Image (cartoon, rainbow, N blue to C red; front, top):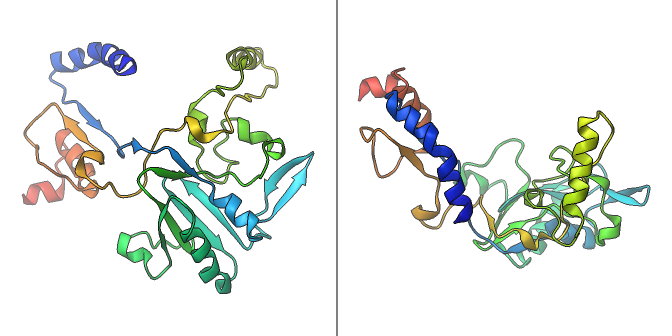
Length: 255
């Protein structure tokens, strides 16, 4: 609640200015966040089953997608599983489906039911249960974690890491080290920001699976009640925003 009040206080002058100018204000969320406390280490499972390979450099382990028979790209409550040999798909599906926290595992034939049958989708797509989410972790002990694991490094991690939103709570000097890294940055020196925790227990919410109730879904708020409705499709949001901006779309003209 403290954070919510701080956001309200910061937005109030902007909203007041918009109202004074007659400007329509829209607040749009891409998704809804629901409570989720159970991480699913899907890549660690694939590694223990002998399906995921790593290579070692300077004592640190890095995922090797080229030699792996299967690996997962984690994205919150969804994980795309890429399987090199089609003959391995039934086995991979079975072991992932038995992993605690996994709700569904969809193959290529089932993915069209959710309109996720993209050419770059995994041979399998795993969906977590409402209280669970997928980690990207593939190392088995933290002393073998790669150099980017404790940093905000979205391009090197094989999946999204929500722990990047937190400073490591087990490190009493984490804020000091972060400040020192920022100081090096301002001085033009080389620096690393090694402050992200490797323990995912700090993550308490997630998204990605279809919401079980409308209350858990994304929301669109508008200061103009004219286009109000109980529900709007994601594909209709663009047209609505163009209409509000005075750029009438073909679909709105037809209405």
